[in-house]
Length: 317
View (cartoon, rainbow, N blue to C red):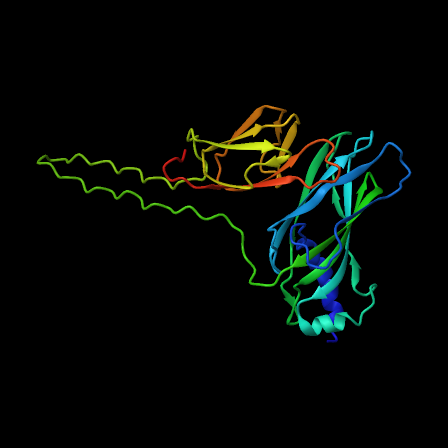
């Protein structure tokens, strides 16, 4: 047990990458937000909704992408952002480590991590997503790091603290998974035919055919349209599985203009104006996660839609 304090120090670093707003441990307090007074009257910002993490059911030892959206609610342009993380260990699944944890003070169970800096320019009245990739630790000194935590996230813009929120999270146990695209199989090249000899002094050689190229993950449009409607600030379908080259059509049934944001910046934002439609052809395979944003969200979490684009062997470019 003498190494438990060292383990908890590393737990603090691991906990950030295991955060998820959709996997709150039972018994923890709900999300808490607090505005922070600061000198500049024209400068203000806030975290829109609840930060999202992929995968949402993160296990200790996995690599995680953290996504959050920062809104400029002031009249001065935000030129840089900083996120300060403070992690408090709430409970551990390892019985012996959890028993020792109960003897520690709140100060010893809490660690403050180095700030994470961003240089994203955000104009007044707009918001932009920021994201970072983290790697969690599965165990230390033979003790599992799975457990529950309270994370305090403090947002600073242009060097001034403006808001903080407390988020209870769970770091799950289990074998770590690797989230990689399914490789495209390579076909065998076409064999070279044997030239047929002719009764002449010099035979005319038969040209060797070019082997069939390996399929790529970029496809031409299939002409197929997958329909989804947006209504009451939500996607109609939370998950879609389509072929590369298919087109997704979002139909806005509301009188609100939405911005569809790919959370990992794989593509530009899509503007979905009130009572209009927007489309996008997914020519490249992969997994896409979209957030639905609009003005005056007032701290609400965005609706999320996950689209899986798979390889279509009959439609490569």
